[in-house]
Length: 430
Image 1 (spheres, one colour):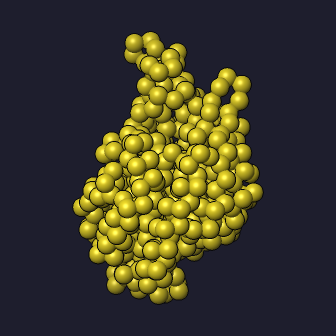
Image 2: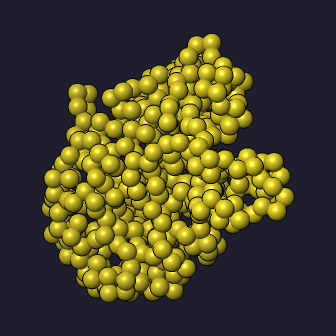
């Protein structure tokens, strides 16, 4: 796999000629929105096909899979456009296998709202081990606010993807509810009521397990949290359900360095199947203009975590949202708007910007001036970012990653992951 960075004067045709790959394949594999206006600094992933198949009249996905002794899921992974088609087209070329060598098996998860566009969901499911429904909200008295997710669960299982239920004390709009969280960890009776309700939902709806997002873990309340999680764990394990604990480390930024709160999570890791460390990014941000989840900070956190938690129990959260900041940044006042990676590149093309890349954070960025002559900076993710972040999984021996979030199909990300890793599927998901 080659990650080509567009240079001044290059066109999609010149890149095609250089690597001897059809223009249509480059556009399709990389989700390029404006192939006639490439941006200097934009990434294009180059992968060569090893085995291809030209569709004949009587072909079906099942017959092609059987012919080459591969799974239908592999065909969908290598040809995501198939999820948008009702049938195969005669003469259509399908990729059976690429030339790339896979690094290792990996667990891939992702968060999704129940109202996700079905076409986007169908394109994404072949790349997943688990899919996590966001968000079952908990009240201070131990009730759980239900979610209409029956169609989501049905589709997930039809693709062999294990559905997980996210439970949190977040509000409907993602706002932290500290009083609710503290009430629950301090009240065993409410905990018992909550656990009963959660297990009932999991069993009734056919969930594979629970992803519990636990906020406000501190060195002062860690013992109470450990007791609560252990109680939850005993019940879920007795029911044969997977238990994942999601934690967002508190990160402190100042002018000279970045640090994070150090808490001993070792006992928590003994009670769960995995601990997921991630940050949930929303449609806006008040944070300073920096990359979301910079790799240098992730490394510092992983160095600390793997000293106390078996790395195979760790899952790395991968936020794929970028942000657009108007400068100068004013703390507490400035608001950055979220932007997808493809939209960021399109914006760079429209404004004639050059995309730069910060090696320390493994993130691309660019500056532009809007119609009112205000300077902006945009940080986002590209193929280099994804390769670098996901590459931490084999480097540290982690269980896998979970993507926040799956509401849009990040073509280049899935292309990179699919060509470097074999995605684990849970057998007999029904």
